[in-house]
Length: 118
Image: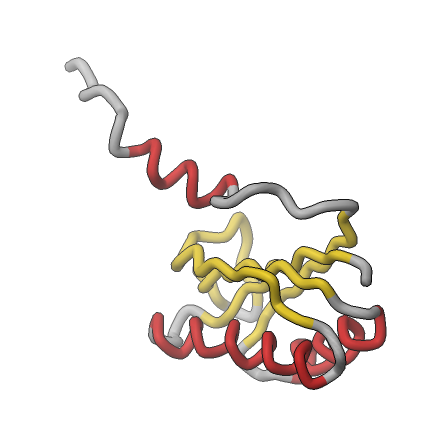
């Protein structure tokens, strides 16, 4: 089956648990349609470059899947209809990269920064 990577942005007024439950929900949608969610990551609340639906921030989530095109189309359709999801991006890839994603790596590297000099 083809491999896909999905990133979606949920509304900022959701709790972290609600945003993570959206990842699980869309993973089950894939499973119900003959695919599977290989891995997922919750990237947290991030500030966006511009407002989307009057929101300046959003919960970012990342999902890797191994699913037929029909399952991905159904998941994207349900994401567009879901009131908490503001944006969706799906990319077909040849192979999944190793974990963790670049966003998580950036967060881990921040702890290694040197102190700023005054």
